[in-house]
Image 1 (cartoon, rainbow, N blue to C red):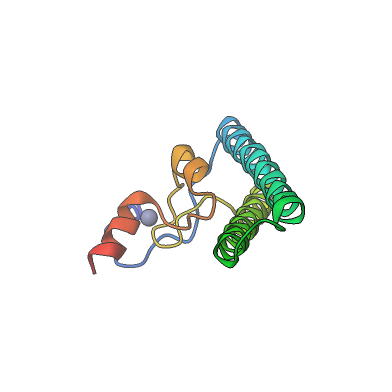
Image 2: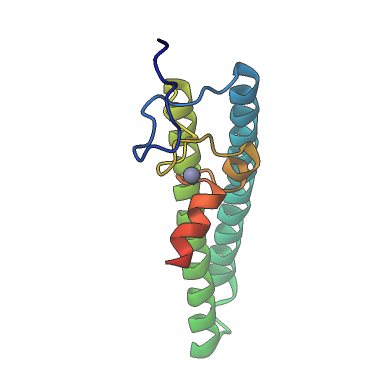
Length: 139
Ligand SMILES: [Zn+2]
């Protein structure tokens, strides 16, 4: 008598993960790399804006009243915190690329299914597939 086939509906989640094709992994890598380049460009842009604000502050602060100075300081702080958050996202993407190499990236933490490439490209730090994310949000 043949052993009964494993029933997929039986409570526990399968431990073995689905496999992702090499081509798909490459697609994710390309998407992440593109995202990282985009973020780096954005970061450079922000840094040059900070430099510019800094220069403004040094050159024409003599004629500024306190309110102007306050606004410029505020703008600069905004830019700096923007730069920091971009840097953080770059780190996330780089970490994702490392995990991708190790094979531990891009799988849903809840159902174990592969997270779609498009989703990973948009949210490199995503750990859930769209379905599980929606379930999570509904709770
Ligand atoms: Zn899932």
